[in-house]
Length: 72
Image (tube, rainbow, N blue to C red):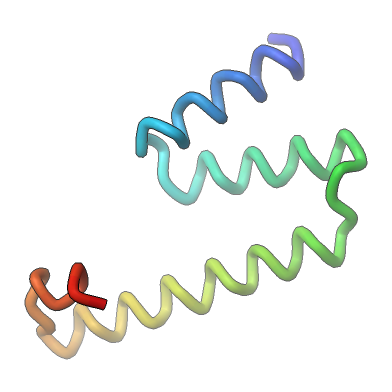
């Protein structure tokens, strides 16, 4: 599969809310390979994602209700 088609499929999937973190990580890899993002920028995005996942995990462990997630 060409990189352009792969990128188009990834962007379409992300726009449709499919694939989650795996798809986003794949997109970061493609952007890095194309020279759009450098290693430090990719690391920064991954660190933000990891922090958000940790926070979400902590909320789940505390038994927070799903409604609260949408209220911000």
